[in-house]
Length: 265
Image 1 (cartoon, rainbow, N blue to C red):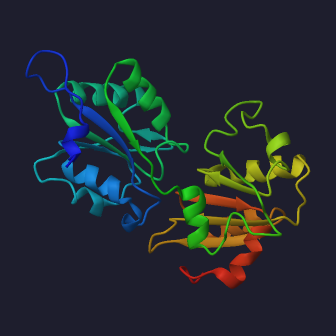
Image 2: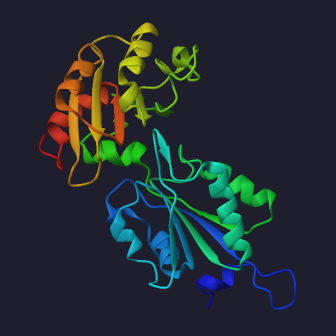
């Protein structure tokens, strides 16, 4: 029978073990939403390199002997810059370690997992991607908002709101995205909410379009504020919400009044 360690490549000098990196999605916040395979990787890791939004209880799933390294980032604070994280993965793998890079949500959805995989591939380090449950659809689901719904929305787009306004000309093509999908899901956009709303209105999104702002999604601290493009900024300001957040724009937001099941706000 094939075991976890059978998938780890060996190479180089005779008897020298070559490590492997697993890019694992931890899910959107609720630790029980990690996948079975993700949990298996976590329990076999020699080194665990984890992000800020990973629930602490998942760290206890790793072996007591595993080295645990925090590399979390916030808007204005980085424990390690991305280049340093890449080099850390490389160093630990070259030591022959089973390395788990534990990332919130899904590693390939606005999580820079693709960049890390590319770096590992360039340096010929064996790696595997273990997809996770993305906050892009899981957090709306916990708020009672399906991102698609027959007769209302047959498409959705996921957009980063984190650096959408850092330049004189927004890096996001709002003129195409605003009306290009039935539902817009914007991640990491709470601090830029005002600018995001302005861009959507500027690019032909009706002021009456429903909007939901969900923070701390899938956790016991989840909060959800709903409104329209016309009033959502003031509503959110009055509630003093804090990141992480998911913003949902579209008619599906109206379904929350019937479908909300997790939070009571």
